[in-house]
Image (cartoon, rainbow, N blue to C red; front, side, top):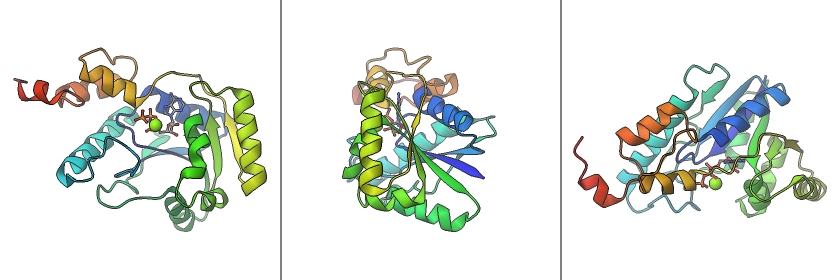
Length: 216
Ligand code: ATP
Ligand code: MG
């Protein structure tokens, strides 16, 4: 089996993530894509780190939104391997654990250009390369040339196996979605309908003052 791993914070999951998963699935003949929400990423401003209950609540929402987004798609799965609000997860360790737990599977780690260009800042990043093939998609201002240069650099320096993942270029990020939701702007078509509805029902990403005044 060939498994694609789509790691991220997914705060919230959006169509950029889903399209990356779908194109990786088709173009690389993968059998399944596992969405892997991280627990309490050290580098994210959305984690409070000092309010465990809040972090756990936020994680529950992030997980639930992925569940809704992939509902009814048999080749998309949810992995709760890193879903702990207290334990920090490291990609290399997760990938090593996946390789040991599923010796018959071949793993492909899917990421966007921002992650590919930041990967040398990840803890123990060199340990990731032997565990999987990386599928890297373009994002923002990075073009094919930038990607090819970075792929060649990482491959030569670390023996990384990296392929360019050609998916539609979408200028969508969870940050934009959180910002738009906080201002009460539409996020429809950026996330699946079920996720937009969930965000609305749970008043996610709203200003604190809005939440307090909410009646329903
Ligand atoms: P945030 O704005 O909170 O950082 P995000 O949209 O970047 O959210 P993440 O959960 O941080 O989403 O991203 C998970 C992975 O998906 C990363 O590897 C990221 O590069 C990739 N990704 C997210 N959105 C896109 C997009 N529109 N195009 C290409 N890659 C994307
Ligand atoms: Mg991001």
